[in-house]
Image 1 (cartoon, rainbow, N blue to C red):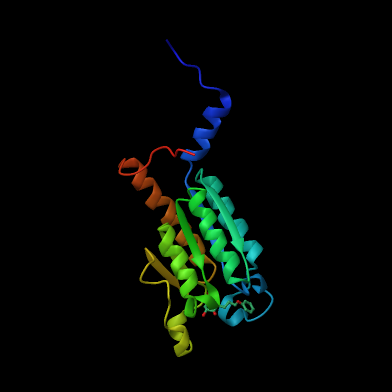
Image 2 (image 1 turned 90 degrees about the vertical axis):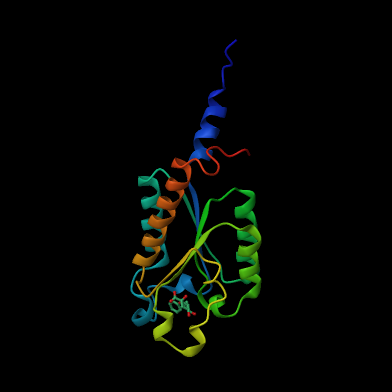
Length: 176
Ligand code: CA2
């Protein structure tokens, strides 16, 4: 006997097979493009998000972006990402890079692999920016390449996820 799958079920499994990447932006990054171009460049957050969404679409991936100025909101978004079976996170924790054990714990707790991105080279700046609460947990860190750093991080994430599924080492289809 053959079982007919409803078109909704087929669409659902097709969606869930797409790599799902969440891009998180920490506090004050909503101000990008308006001030401090010496450190952070001229691109606005909207420019960056649009470029990432397009890159994702071209690769057949689902890319979501989220910026917030509050630690708890970022933590809640990471918890939600685990419930949503997000495959990979690209995060610029901004000022929380150097202060937030709680945000670090959220990433450690969900165990979603992530790349840490900084627009500026944090090692060429003040001493307090040289320590990150995230780098030892990250798959990798990109710092100082401006907005391009986000695109490189996303390209890495998509390649990483493609290798994972093509080698059949982890999930090939998610159960929701
Ligand atoms: O270089 C980066 O991406 C940083 O994560 C940016 C953070 C900073 O605290 C980190 O040390 C390095 C600051 C983000 C603030 O963004 C602004 C953008 C425009 C105007 C003012 C702030």
